[in-house]
Length: 114
Ligand code: AMP
Ligand code: ZN
Image 1 (cartoon, rainbow, N blue to C red):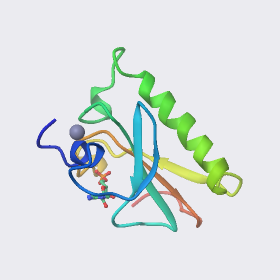
Image 2 (cartoon, protein in one colour):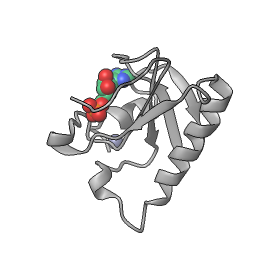
Image 3 (spheres, protein in one colour):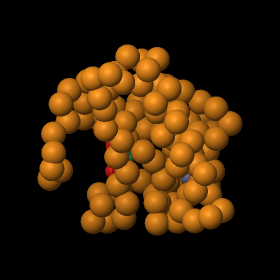
Image 4 (cartoon, rainbow, N blue to C red):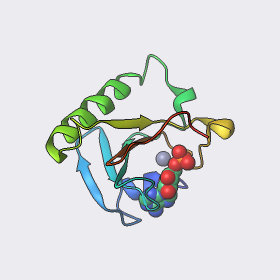
């Protein structure tokens, strides 16, 4: 999508600090980290939000969780634990209209959310 921040990050128009990439997803460090480890995993295909997930594109969700488990092992935060967050829509706190999953680790993240 031409006017989407994360599509521009995926195609390199806007720089990012890459954590991981494959044919389906791109992962990069959040510009405003909320934990010692805070990166975003985004599908390379533009999907506006979790509300748009259906039979045609739901495979990406399992792929994202699989990639995060691999990165958690490789980067060393898996055993201590981590949180995967998806904010959906206005009340969910979504500010960028391209589906993304936050990965937060490196401290006790706390619960419940504010
Ligand atoms: P959300 O509020 O769930 O939509 O999350 C959007 C996230 O994108 C926020 O945590 C922002 O800090 C992050 N963000 C915004 N612009 C950039 C950027 N250029 N590079 C990396 N992360 C960004
Ligand atoms: Zn996009």
